[in-house]
Length: 568
Ligand code: FRU
Image (cartoon, rainbow, N blue to C red; front, side):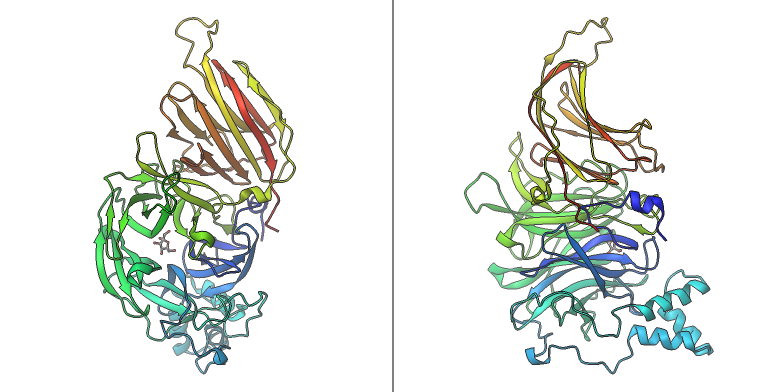
């Protein structure tokens, strides 16, 4: 049942699962009409485990319709992370001729039918079958709950209601998911094909399609490499800190191409790799570079899990980084396992990440559901002040959600002053700010107490004395994010403050801040620095104030928008 925390912390414009646990985004693909978001999902409880693929679709990447589970945990293992591609020409041969598209009533017993049979039977043989079906650390009574859930699952073994209009134009093939089946002994790569535009995913009979006899070999991301006319899979040998590249012409047979790593920050495990060809902003039109994203857990510099990236070249066989630079996608600690969208209109690079951290994801104050996705973010490459190519990330088409702006006219703030405005309780809001601190203000404080040469602070607060601040320090040109004075959650790993260096020597800075229930996303200087944080105010934040110390500030832009709620 839903607790107050379950309601209070559920975001209004970010995807979160109706119930149970969610981690990585999977199978992100635009099929020409729908954006699919599959996700790592435990439907039975608010903890990681019993991993299935949940499924939601959207036409705008903000308004999601949750659909029945697409891939189940089976006797072959849990359904770990993976991706989806469109096999338009049926190169895989997985798709029957169009006339036979309708799933045939199977002769094989479905998981639901099996669960029903086992729940009725009482024999010893059954107990062994039950143990095999209800895998994992389930206690006796939990096993029957698990079986009941399997039996009552709206999809398994029944005709699937089709709430979506047929998405795909007639094509020989269709949507294929490539993912990891995981048992404690083995991680192997599986194919599943969809007869109905992504709603149901049927395991290929010849699975696994890639098995190297390994127990930490997972998270395949596949894409079509045009120049060499083949599918390329990026997958990790986690504990060895290697990203492996494989090639295939039919998705069923894979050849090893090369390995990358260990490189950058190794942490304990490499997870969820992604390789994308990304546009370089402001250079020759069409100029692109390849970006390899590698998530690491645990062992991220901010603690726990985080994603790093490398910029370089990919020739269809190997990834060669341009330089020795390793950078993180985030200066906070709650953005992990990002996956880029396949088949995005205009070949844009847009990703969604899991807005969470493995350090505390199973102990968050909400209980009937856990796990949130980030906003969709568009990625480009841009040169930083030293001339290196870095990713810049911004919310994708968020403007479409803006309601009438909340008036907050302000063009200048004198030193040691502040202004405030009420923000609507329970709504997601976006703040857009472009400001510059002037030179240090000669305050009348005695020597030694004058402090640094100016700070600009954005504070969200409430009457109960909680506050959340995002600030810019003009002396060091650094940004901070401080969630430590919120009282809804405390945990040894739930650290409070994070910082990021902006442009050295520049007292001007730009911020785009999105606050939505238990989430905060900060995009600084047009996305060059991004900070993502879970936040747990015990009481709703009701006031926004801007304050400056030790310097006046010129405000070039200050806009505040409530955002249209997309989650019902
Ligand atoms: C990353 C991860 C993946 C794995 C999945 C299991 O968060 O550990 O490596 O496939 O989660 O749910």
